[in-house]
Length: 111
Length: 108
Image (tube, rainbow over all chains, first blue to last red; front, side, top):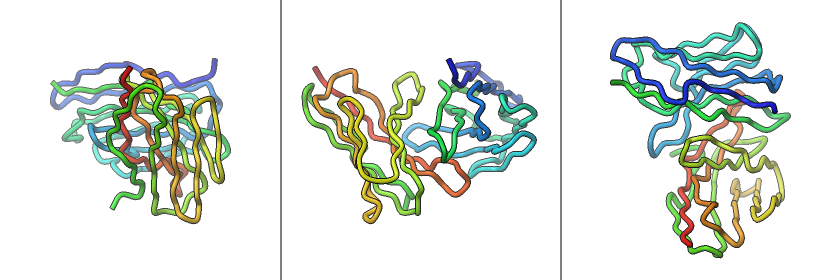
């Protein structure tokens, strides 16, 4: 079945560490997105990519980085510059010609 | 003011009740989405609509483009419908702009 795989489901990070969240899709969708969800808040856009080797900052890109070397993969790195990284992170694919598909999310906690 | 507003924020219903969740938006859109998020966090797309009405099982979604308003209805609600329901509209970058969600709890 086509879909999105996010890993890991739970991730713990020490202060000052970089961590990378994985997002892989086999839907052959061009567009991929990373969102952050905090309790009581709507999802907010971190980064998006509409084509391989190209990506754009979203509303809250500071402290994050991404790459899009392959169509199937859009990893998100949470750097030590992100001062409040504890959150739920969701990856999605999709666009205006078809619906959006979401991964199951990664819950990141700073310890 | 948020670009996408949902009401109510929390909703408790008895099994069998008819449920309505509302969404108002202030930006121009090409499509509006209704999504369902279960406690584990995963999100499922329920509807994508740009006009009129769509129905899937016990779920009905309507949209009024002129009034910039959409509603999600659940008929004959069931405890398994308990989840967070999220309204989202497509932004100019192709991304979705999300409401904060409505937490629905259906009691048996």
